[in-house]
Image (cartoon, rainbow, N blue to C red; front, side, top):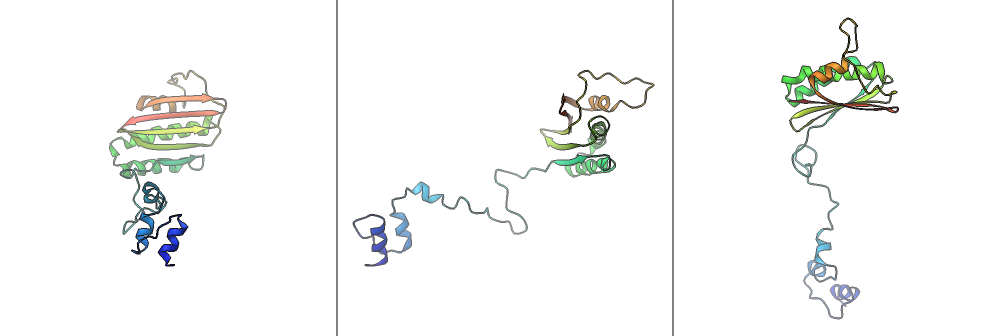
Amino acid sequence: MSATEGAANMAGSDHPLPDHGQADLVRHSKIPYRKRRNRNHLAEPPRRPNGPPKAAGGPRRRRALEITISLAGLEGLRAKVGAWMNRLGAARVRDDVVLVAHELATNVIRHGGGFGRLRMWRESGRIVCRVSDSGPGMPALVQEPEARRPGGRGLWIARRLAEVQIESGPSGTVVVAAMAI
């Protein structure tokens, strides 16, 4: 018995297969073609000559900026946000975005328990800045700051420069500010 006849008998066929090599064994098997065609679906995508594999699903998206907010890192926050804005090519609104991000991060230090997260990304022609903390929350109504009193203007400034949404509760606060590019 030849190898192809043995393979035919293992597949449950009563007639021998033509001796045309391995390709005929696959073509004549009882496994539907649809299932065989995709057997390499777990293979790695092809590598580019000078870099990582191409991302599936269209052009590569720029990454979001993520920063842990703390008193020690507050000084470097402005530089990181400014550099990220420059990489995006959004220098026209860079200073406003840096100011909003810094003011919201400062509020996390002062009122939100001292630690939090800042995440920024580009979306539909605007920059979105999300700041979260695990502090005690904030009052539902935030009043306009008094002219003679120092401080208390972070959220007021953010609202003047961006669309701001606030979600607050006993387990923390999330502030999302969106600015047109």
